[in-house]
Length: 191
Image 1 (tube, helix red, strand yellow):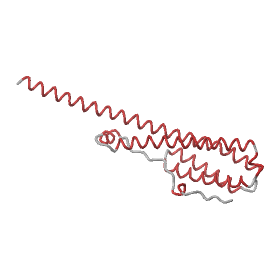
Image 2 (cartoon, one colour):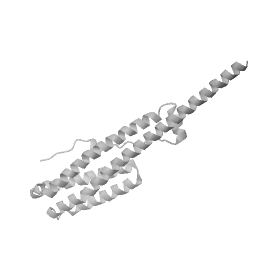
Image 3 (tube, one colour):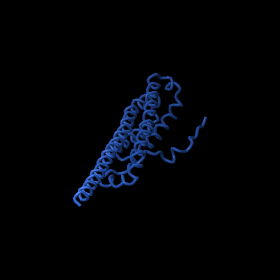
Image 4 (cartoon, rainbow, N blue to C red):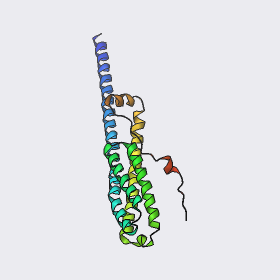
């Protein structure tokens, strides 16, 4: 009888240790994944900041050639300011919306550039344009990495019993960095 009681007690202790081990392991995994999402979001913000820092140089170069295009320059300045504010809020949706507005203003700037052949030949302008293109590529990679880390943590949080550990530890699903319906449309090219 004593042996049976010891065996039951041993099994219960092993079960408690296994459950605690699972909880601790899952908790730690969720924390690492959550930190990975945060780090990837920081990379998106770094690239957005880099782009924001390049834009004034590009605008100033264009201003020298296109003095009468003030509305475009004002729109770009306003869009940059809005994006900076959104980045400070850490709100993915606000950053997406602000990024879309800035992209729209930049596309209008590039239309203006087409009207000034000397500007397109200017080395400072082409260098800045290349820098901006490189930044856009890095931004696309950072967005992809962020969305992949969000997909991984969101999928894990939705599975049982990990969902219980996530709820107890306060780890929540994250928003994807998505493009708008306007950005999904094929651009209209006119010659």
